[in-house]
Image (cartoon, rainbow, N blue to C red; front, top):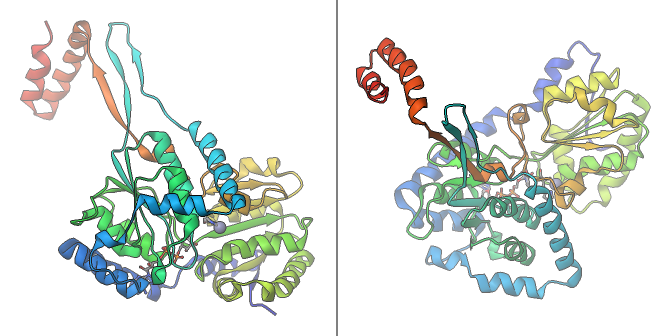
Length: 432
Ligand SMILES: NC(=O)c1ccc[n+]([C@@H]2O[C@H](COP(=O)([O-])OP(=O)(O)OC[C@H]3O[C@@H](n4cnc5c(N)ncnc54)[C@H](O)[C@@H]3O)[C@@H](O)[C@H]2O)c1
Ligand SMILES: N[C@H](CO)Cc1c[nH]c[nH+]1
Ligand SMILES: [Zn+2]
């Protein structure tokens, strides 16, 4: 029988069992943190040389210069031309749907005029240059290329620099074709914390960017956290997660495969099922046992399910919603008869998949919404990657002569109260 933790929410120990389940091993955390700190320091001090060294060490790719690791545009175009028609059509169809969805997120500058003629508002501008991290260690992610670059281009970002690791020098044609379709500007075959460092600090070959976006493994997530402040970051989008709330009426094989679909990303991925029906949890366990040996990535799935997965019996679907809010999962499938009745109770999740037909896998590729989503409980305060991540706002203050009289009086009083006389006088000059 495949090992998956079985829990009952009614058990008095449940709260601490859940906390333990959600926690990533602290020892591993520390090891990752110190490795990443060292890598970032080396990139900051040595630039290209350190990038070459780590690319050799972690991806087994040796190059004499970082320029050699830039994938020329011609190679992406050739990759696109060389794709089988079915793959090219699928990529283009996904790109069209992702673009159509994200066009709706674009924000425009706005102003309003007060009675005295003062105009206030916000001017929205795109970021100048962004770095896209596209994961490539254990799997290649052409879909992530589209999910990152399309909202950037919809926002109007001029320069999009993509980095992606190519273990053993294997450049994935679908990833390159997706870069061509999505409108990426430059591609470098580097990954991990060292690529994040290169984008944040800049090297002789890779220009420093204003913001780094995109998912990645625990090393990438840690590096993004550490460079925040030097550059903007979108969020912490780490190892994938799925939480399924099921009423026990969806075919057990569907649910087992939905759990596998995220577990197969990474040993650290997390797949959890909440259901009030103990018999259904048994059926899903049977389905896992039967289907797991047939999966090409069974080793990764088995490790993820064993260490981080769980089948949890709840008393009711309402209780399942409460537990889901505590977990704040990246993906939440609400596989029940009437998902709309539960929606108002679900506060924290990166993406909510409504009903038995909305498998999370459709969202990963082509439903349209972004698949770069907050993980590790950060859906409590973060949102999916979107056009808004590539736009910034400047306040607009255009005070009329009459407005200066009115505002000047208020500002003068407050500035005097703060003990800042230059502020007070600057405002007072305009009271004429
Ligand atoms: N949240 C999302 O939106 C989303 C989307 C797609 C993928 N993902 C997640 O992204 C992750 C992709 O991970 P991946 O590993 O396939 O690719 P990755 O590109 O994120 O990581 C590969 C890199 O990790 C670095 N690395 C590996 N082992 C290391 C070590 N011991 N020390 C230092 N650096 C090391 C290497 O530099 C390597 O190039 C998965 O966890 C997947 O679940 C998340
Ligand atoms: N599920 C991932 C986000 O956690 C995205 C993805 C890309 N390809 C397949 N899945
Ligand atoms: Zn996925």
